[in-house]
Image (cartoon, rainbow, N blue to C red; front, side):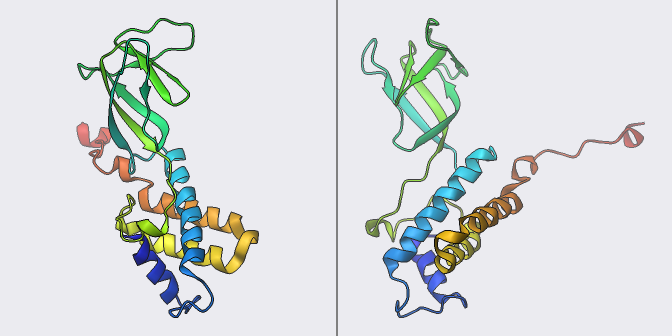
Length: 193
């Protein structure tokens, strides 16, 4: 799913009917898409969904230099040391070891030579140059994104709460129980006995 796919779907929506771009330019739709995607990323992060989680390998440059966090870093899920063990966070003033870390600004500090981290990204705005690139969102979000962009275009600035509610409800329906889909059902006591 590319931004162009969504722009075309928005233009074809019965509420918009703007295939000749008479009412909305690609720029207008792209700005609405950026706003909707930012809401969507934040909603997924708040609901602890792992759908968009990314993994990055960090290398220390020097002894006291921290490792730069990825440009789209929003929230840390887990950090692993060079041996693959989960690292623990340390507050300012506490000593760091190879198995602990501290995040200050846009850097992660640790004594470990290498760190692998799982993190939640924030949405990096799309530009005209990104229209043909695949989005990180799965294709099953296309309808939700289209509806939210259409609502945002039609309502202007007054209906942001309606868009937020639409996205929140849509995300809950689409991914609400996804994390639990691989967990086998627990047997009731009547089945065990």
